[in-house]
Amino acid sequence: MLTKSLMVCAAMLSAATLYAEPAGTDENSFSGDSLNMRTDTTTAKTYHFGKRDVIFDASGIHFIKDRSNFDQSFYDDEQRSPFQQNYYQSNANGSSGSAQPKPKKYRHFNSSLSAIDFGIANFASEPISVELDNSASYMDLSRGFQLAFCNSSGLPIISQQRFKLGMGVGVGAKIDFYTFSDKKLKLDKVDGHLVHFSDTANPYKKSKLTNTYLTVPVALEVQYRGLSVLAGVEGNLLVWSNTKMKTSTGEKKERNHSNFCQNMFGYNLIAKVLVDEIGIYARANMTSLFSDGKGPELYPFSVGVTFWVF
Image (cartoon, one colour):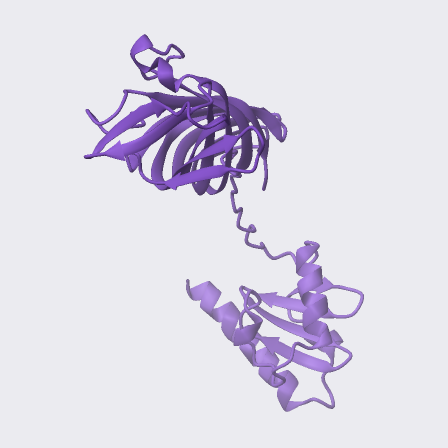
């Protein structure tokens, strides 16, 4: 410690001599001090004393208090001078001989939850099933369609060049379009219960139910060389529901906006497999479409294609 203090004192005295005798002192005389370590660049010469430097360039002599922080230097000009620019560049190239701090590595994880989904939708009488009981056969579909989109953020757990493991959390929406096989099927709510009947008095050619949900998915995802696999849970909030009846001539359309005794809140399991930006997905509701005892026990499910958007 004593030796280091003596070296710093000698450096300070040498720098003071330079400022006291500007006419008779130059960098050649300063370099004669055996305590100095000299580094030459194309535009300046630098002498190091621990973290302190004395720099000679065309504009004069500059005493730097802390080479890692120019804001603490004794340079009078608030703007960075040309010798400081060259000094930063020489340090970046390793010519100054001083150890530079490693740049911070910011890990990013882009979750495949940020996607647009197109798929077919249907009902089942039990969770994670595709079978429909005869007791709910009147709800049989001729076709069903699902449109969903989501924006998400990713939390990296393991981040390597080829392998990544992370968690995605998103906010999105999905719309389920159900077209019934019975083209004259009407749904209504009476005394807090779902009722249904076939309207044969009008020439209907389509009976349709549309549900719109806000979604909040949370999923664990693995990414390896362009392959992405995720699985998680998605919360649902029903924000809009309506039925539509359409006649064969297209002149008459009947719409009924109602809740139809459906569960406002629910959740489903979600899984996706993607190669690069395209893949397949599956959703399976674990909550019945209708409230307990107020309608048939139906569990929606869907499968389709997904397109990863960043």
